[in-house]
Image 1: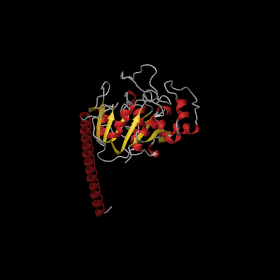
Image 2: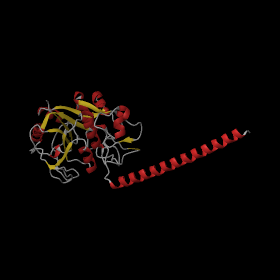
Image 3: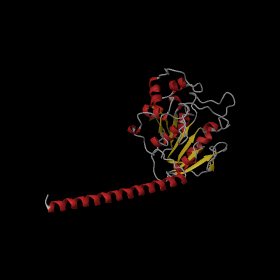
Image 4: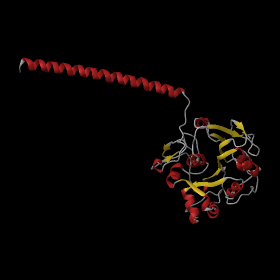
Length: 317
């Protein structure tokens, strides 16, 4: 080996060793920096309140529906199963606490009501907690209300029969399992129509146990000990229209399919509190709009289908 070759080899070895030392130094500094950033983030997450990330306020594309497990369409939690069993009052999401009817109401909102900045929204007797309310306030001018405040505290106290609100003031009213506790349905619907802006929306959810509206045959109370005045039926659609609302009944794909075919072959036992067969036989297919495909309903536990329906009412412009 010549003297020049030897010098060149030594020089190359020196350069490589310096390069390796430099790379090791950079990697160690990077690792230290990453560890510092992660520890700071963990400290911050531990100190800050938990923020709920809601499903975006826009229609859910079918490709977004998971292929397996369950999926909360409200907070986007995924897992093997919700707590409990499929039912409008069960199937509890471990992250946001929603049950089946909460998910159906929120899904109806994002599927049928376009979002825009500064929407004025009132939700009657919201069942979900402050994390959900904070998330809604980040999206809209969101107010909660209640009347007797036995089970749910609201920002304002609101009597649906006589609302202390201006005419043509409200963009969206979300009212779930409230109207059945109001003695004068006609007064409440007239008041809601009055306070909604032209083009405003109401999403109305009540326990739908029978085909025709009637008062309870004996005193009936819900879990919060609130008296039930009315057991509503499918004829509520025409009552809403008689007050001027453009009205559709939002349902799952399975229920719409059964109504169209008058299919009451349930293939198993039914929950006794609902006359599911009467609902399928008396519903008008023209009144129904599907907001949950079979796949989405299965993942979100919007089952059994006869327990999930929301009236979407629009005040004409």
